[in-house]
Image 1 (cartoon, helix red, strand yellow):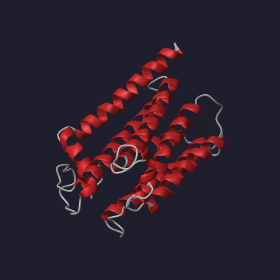
Image 2 (cartoon, rainbow, N blue to C red):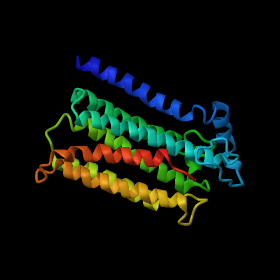
Image 3 (spheres, rainbow, N blue to C red):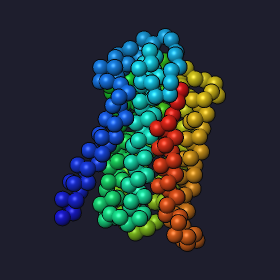
Image 4 (tube, rainbow, N blue to C red):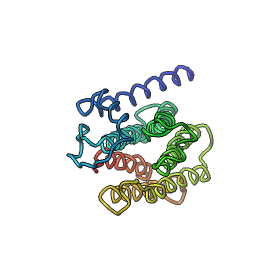
Length: 248
């Protein structure tokens, strides 16, 4: 039965994540538009600011960036919703634990692969060449940041297999804190100043810090309030909403 549940969880989460991405892109950009954006991003020389959700912008950098941020936001909303169902005991906890872990892992893999259309593994540059791209700094940052949701996925699955541990919660909180710091130092090549784009990343980082603190509170025996178990899922959903409404 456990193997059946695991297989079903994997199928459901793949379907959920794929559905979220299809929903995000439907009506916003066709497949040909997105491929055109990827092909032209390296040659973009002009920066045009269109409406927040306009994926048909003539600037492919903006189109691709919006697509990635909004898709990431939907993925985090899915994680938060699954965690909320888990905290409300509306589903078997082992089952939701696998779903949450798989969603984190798929989200991290998605960012790792799709985060940079110019560099490895989907771009024109190979792995070694990617380190010498003009946007090599962003490429490295995206790859490192993508490891955080992957590790959180492993944590979400492992926490159901071992006794409650403040040490494990500390590691998870550290990852969330590291992610927040990464968002603060994250700089895009065409946005070196403190503009609306970077201000939003500061807001993402602040929310990540709250998530880190809530992870510690959730596992702390000193805090006995039952509501503490809802802090993390709600804050993750807030972060997902921030990303889903991201503008440039």
